[in-house]
Length: 109
Image 1 (spheres, rainbow, N blue to C red):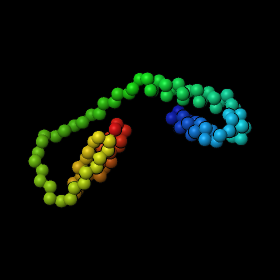
Image 2: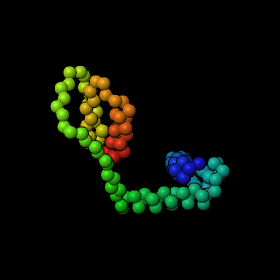
Image 3: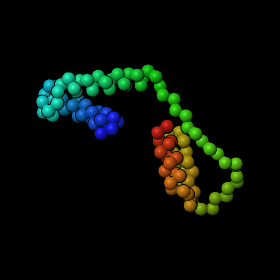
């Protein structure tokens, strides 16, 4: 498993533990885990969330524009809102490009 997969796995385990209502010892016994291992991961994630909440991440997006042109739209259009961004999609759009744009906006908005 990659590092990210291991972290996702442990985040899911911790969420399951918290929702169980059991003590750490009880839950670990049922799941054949060591209590210290569970507590170490809980501590690790709590430290990460403290660092993340005290130092906001600034992410820059790269945008490439073309020369402005006048477009006359005769076909149907659709406007997609993601966060504070809006995308107007016209008939005959490039679905791969739209998917890429939506992915970038979803991560940043």
